[in-house]
Length: 632
Image 1 (cartoon, rainbow, N blue to C red):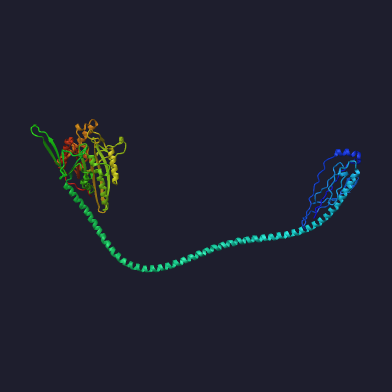
Image 2 (tube, rainbow, N blue to C red):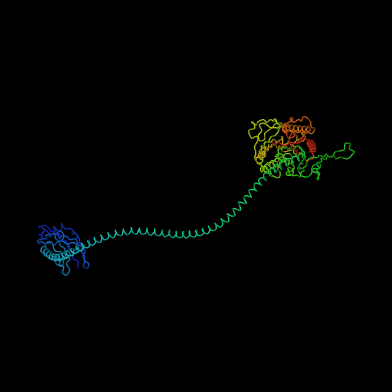
């Protein structure tokens, strides 16, 4: 279908009446001439096929007359949605441009050769306008016809649109119903999924239960089989039980008989222990309640001493030889020998272990209820402290630590026989005839004064002395180390570390056998005496001289006590020194006593060695009577 232009009529502004006059027109045009206004086009409707788009129904505007000079032209109503108009409007001033002619007609030109008419050519202008009006009327007729067609098409389109709207409404209602059904179906689907999952879980549970059921069936079968086996075993066990009951009766009777045997054996063991103690004590008494051991210190540079002779076949004899010049000068030099016999003589090669083995039986007597005393005597530097205390490593341990170890180990063995022991340790030194507590740990200015007291039952005690309860050998060894740090020592010409006091270690032992109602009490006394020395050799001065005088005085009093005991004097001077007064119970009382006489092997110590051996011989000849056990 062709597209037709829709021309919207505009009112052409003409000049005033005076402008019709040719004389006045031209100047007026020159003053009022303006550019022509552009014509706004209207969209033209396009019909594709037999369907036309919906066109809004509008009323045609009422035609307005247009004045143009002397002619009046009725303008057709304007149309919407038509093709763009190609007509042009005349400018204000009376000049009208030529418009494009429709297809099939010739364009009408104004004036000769299409030139613009002069302002004074009004007739020509009117002719042009009439021609243009005719063209416009023709166009209006065609446009009106087309407008009528479009109106009918629009009515049909509106009718179709109404039908389509109804169809859309129906479809919308159906869609709403479908949506409701879809929602309902979605709920059903969810429920279906839920039911399906429950079904799956139930199927799994069912399969698990079936498996468990099969397992339970298998277990039931095995348990039934085991039950049958247990029944058979039960019958066997019942028969075995009856046999065991008979055996148990026999065993109970045997246990009763064994219990009686154990009681009897315990009685015999206790009797054997008592007999062992009696025989042990008898052996010790046969050896003597006062025994003397001699020990020779090795030379500092090694080798053997020429003036000391120790027979290889006799370990109880020592000979001191000395070459003497002839007094007349005519005869040759003579050699004089001094022979001494003791309970045992230890040479320089004998170890600490061999020395202690000889006194271990004597230490055992302390646990049997006998008082035991062991002390070392000799000149300064002869090895007394090494014999009694030794060194820290095991092979060099002395008498005191070895005796403590033996006491506690023997007490542990006797514990299996019903014995219980309590031990109390003390350590005191006698320095310049004054008692000092070696276990005291307080301030030196507040050190208490110690005094020796003798009880009614002739037991010697020391007031204000530290008595420590001990339960094992480590505690005792710790106390010994503390006492060694507190002991008085000094350097002399004969010894770099000379003991300037007598140290006395006491271990009080109390034992009880509750089942036998037997008790015993004893004291193990281990003494390290200070070394005797001569002024010419020691070169002691000042405080050292005072110490030497006190040491020699106490040792001299010890010799007097030994002499009085050997002579069996009525009065024994125990109270002459603190040393003899403290050792009164060990020397002349109910005690077993052992003395080590330590001698130096050097030739320049010949005089001190001879003096020490003579003193030891006096002690060896002393008889103090038979010791008795402290039992209740």
